[in-house]
Image (tube, rainbow, N blue to C red; front, side):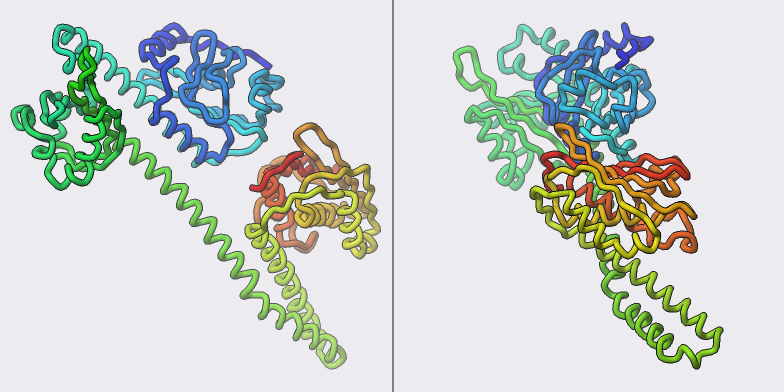
Length: 539
């Protein structure tokens, strides 16, 4: 593990961080919502809003991490702030010398993936990150990276907004130190709407922002009842109930969409805070309205992107179901009649017709195999994971028996090591091993009988099943996309197939909350490893 370097602008960075007074503050809903959005967006167990102090990283918001802070020397985010202009993505932290053996990784229960978007001020100072962490190595899409960066920019805007608000509040408190308790209790925020309402529901003070939003003068508000100002219907349906709670001594926080004369429709977060005199008597209620329209719009855009992705996934699943069901009957008819013609009229057919009919049958059989693969893949989406102790040696024996014909045809052999009993779905495991071992037999080098080795390794967290062959191998540039649907690296004349087998294996791994990895070199064989959690839970 390498400790992080210190940014060149460290003195200015620390000064700004302390000036914002965000360190060691209480949790806030806006920051927690942003962390939750990042966790949902990237589907990770851990999401953090982290600020890098002189010798520690402190978490303003944290999901999946118990501690409020950790040492800076082992902080992943201390590396991320060194490049403020981009999101730092580490797909496999164990493979990165900066993080290998990190004590923070051990504290978090093991980390394999990290993505951190720097939180950068308008003048370019990186104060911390919005980051997501997974226990397993994985990848992240460009859409997710861009969205993570936008959420980090929202955090920066919130910080700077809060900084402005705090400075104006302090100035107002100095100027009004001699005023009565109800006015000094009111926080003055330049961008927040502020008002003081007495126990009778009468406005006694409003700030300029309140007047600007409502498009009115102070004389139009001061001395009037809240119902008269906002309208009887809105007061009856929303405002009156919330104000009554505050006047009874309860602190109230709620959101609503308001139609302001000076600003139009805006989403607002409204706080109603009871204020008491020195003797404990209720002096009135401070109203603070925070404009969260920008945050809501970004949230809506993010939700729209997620919904669009879900719709596309559903459309893809429907298409696969349609192809695997509606095409099966006509393809079976083509296969049956072409085979019947070849069998019953083999002697009477001209050679050219016989050859063309053979092409029809082979094409039909290929489509049948494709439909079978699509049906298998589609069924996985509806499969309810059933975890139980599974004898992997027995599963491999069953697969070997099912592939007996292929073994005889290619003169190959399967060597099986000592295999454990693991927690898995037996049917899914059988399906994945059938695909992996079948591929190992299929993709043999010309003139070299295939040899397939099936072994297992285990640690406290994972059960790993390795399928190794001596076949054609796979070039490095294809390792990242080999598990996609319909991915083929060879033409059908060399090796038949639909490009679905590894996609099925990947989906089996996903359903177990595991992963599928590959080690391979061209003409030196391949090793596919199925990593399954030792105590897997349903996906």
